[in-house]
Length: 196
Ligand SMILES: [Zn+2]
Ligand SMILES: [Zn+2]
Ligand SMILES: [Zn+2]
Image (cartoon, rainbow, N blue to C red; front, side, top):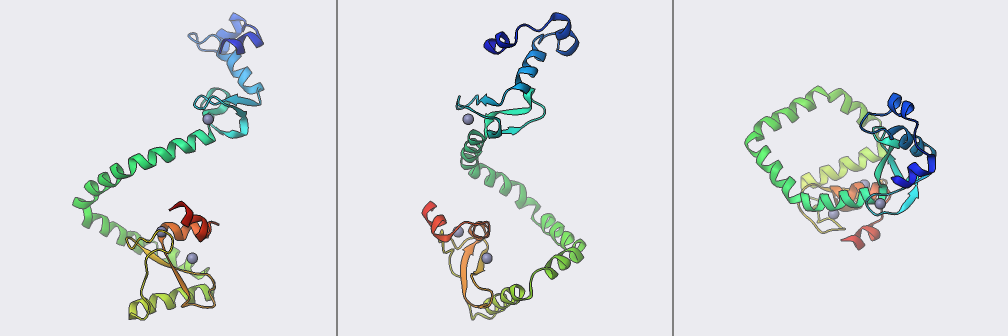
């Protein structure tokens, strides 16, 4: 902090008083310095990186977060991992006594948004809808059985059928909801399998 102030020179007392907080007389100098620079040091990994590597935070002096994007994502990945069990337990304790209430709310929500859901469904191309409906029917009739997720092998939760080719409605790849969504976001089966 000291070296930054030395670069700009001291802020005149009157200016500091007009713009800065009385307890932070150098606030203006710091803000000016922050606005002029093009790179910044991450306070977590201590690397100096271009401003584009920091998320914008208008509340902060200089308008950028103190941690770089890499550090932020590493932190939240770690925290998600350690917190997962805790969050699951918390949700169970919350939802079990309120089960009926939550279900009723879900049904109510569906009823209220029926027109909206229909409109969204009508935008899905005919071939895609046909393929999905065929799979749904065949599973219901017992002609097609859902397998475990092709990537992680789970049978828990929602298992979905993925079509490589909507023209072949019964040519289906079974995936859990998480891996199915990631596949549609551009990931490949091989890449996802390597992570498991
Ligand atoms: Zn960093
Ligand atoms: Zn999976
Ligand atoms: Zn799919």
